[in-house]
Image (cartoon, rainbow, N blue to C red; front, side, top):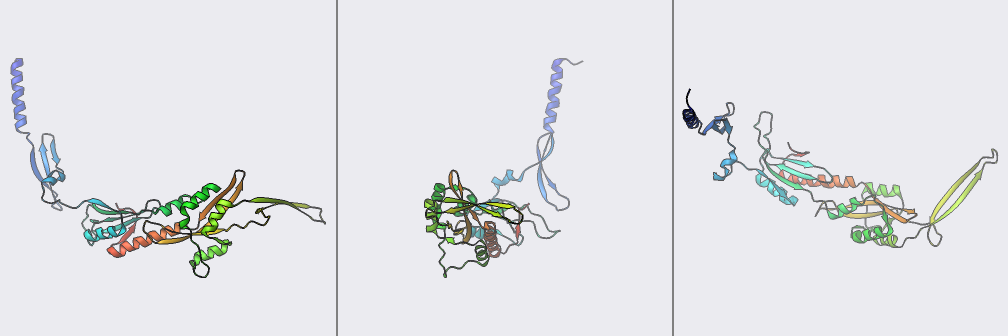
Length: 306
């Protein structure tokens, strides 16, 4: 049996032989159907693919475009798409009312079942910026205000309230039908401010009793009526109109709001309810998407790209 020194010498020789035959080696691999080539590194642990980005810093130009440009104006989105699009680029619109967006996939898959696929790594993104006016009015839609809170809210946003001039301003047909159905007058900006800071409601109650003389049955009805300080029936406008954009720097849309109040032990409570704000958003979003589709001449799909 070899002594310890001899065993160590044999082990060193074997190690040297292994190291001589396990030096890394670069080889080219080729996909048999398409002929696409890739570089692999042969090591003592087997073949490992070499990522193409390893060589990117040594290239004179990138092997392909990739990355997402985040545009802040719809005009810039259109310009960026037109700069890099080809016949197979596509638009994808996300109609989420809290986070709407359009993404252009500039290197989208070629059209057709037999066409070559592409990576879809070069994109243009436009996230629609909701206007401050839209966010303020939709956030407080249906929210109860005390008199002071309602006055403060209106003071900040009174510029959004429209003063409808009879005979000069006409409402869209569907909105006019809504106004006619709800009834009541439309409050002007000054009337809203007056109501929020100076409205005082008194409640006048009465009990009415009706007796059927034939059967002897009696019906008792409790009636409560809101009156002003003069004892006259209180008349509060049932509606007001606002004109606001849905998106920053977008067109102005007119919305109707139902005005409500409630007398509570803690004082008057005001709230408003926007009429069909969802339809206004959808119309504005679709109009913007249609503009992008027309000016880029690309197909528009609603949803997210794969």
